[in-house]
Image (cartoon, rainbow, N blue to C red):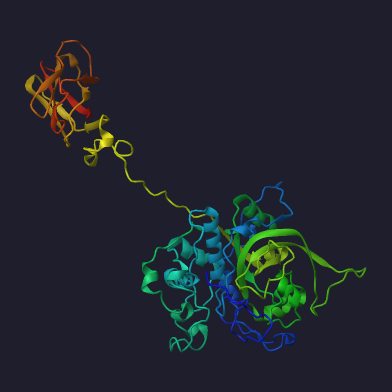
Length: 502
């Protein structure tokens, strides 16, 4: 997040600040002379900002038909990072995306103090995603794609530069935006420290209907802010490049009303766009409407016409000038109110989910999360007196009527002595009465677990408990021998387990 610096909204700054700037330079001649010297910041090519945005009619509704919303919703303001300042670069959609990302990290709570680099995201959107390489402008769609697919670094690894590159930075950074190399729109490439730094991500984002109830439903039910961007109407924003009179008080309060017809016509002569973050709403706020002359509009009885119903938004124009004079103490400096009608008719919206972090794997603990049979646990005090299971799943054929029988071996590593032992045996055979089973200790001592008793029965799955090897070392090769003492029947040892208490 770029550090905030004070802006002097009403003094002559030329093009040194991009108050509504979001990218590609758009000529904004005919500024309102009431503002003194010309204040004409570059504004984004609207087509760039809105590329791919679907019509509301094609998007699903978010709100239930009978869902009720509170008159005001300021809760999400407490989950926002400080107001940022994009300076004189046209990258408002980058700032809106980073504002959303920082908000989602704050809300998720695992890493609530992250400060992400707008500088890096601008580079990633153009060089990694490949969007709009010939302009400094971008869109929320591709910015959030860059965050989801590639991630961004923290601000400290590549701090934001508030001015765009010119010829003094790179001799190629002259002429029209379209003729400049992409490096001129990103202020170069990230330093090695940023390339090697950890990359932080969000889940994929999605288009969202800009209908009032749908945006409210996401804020209320998901508890998350919504990034929006689209048409810029100069008088409605009280912007210095408006050819119509503007209202300084409304600018200080951050009011953005629905544009009157004259503002629509005049603004479309120099089409531009802006992006920002919606963080709440206020149905109770009522603001007097103004006409093309900047005068309050009146109804037939001479009473002021008002507009009610506003979304609360976080802007990227810094603090100290615009959106600084709020009656509601919950509203931070640099925030504003924008008409529901404006948002629904002229903007597009995207929403994203909270980041997801995998719980770090704890160090394994012998006898708990790590089997005492593991080689690293052989001499662990935590495994003393605890059963450790060793297994063989190798299938071994039992030869018919052969005293050599079938032999399977399990290796036990460690220096502990046996306190107790048990054996689980799984055999498939049509006549188990022909079989004898013997366990052989690494020392060569053995114990017969089962005699050939001649009793009929198919297959065998039995557990044998024994104390014959108590006090002997557990280390070495333990063997299980199965002998078929009669002819005509064949079978197999399917597997066996040796459980030792050491």
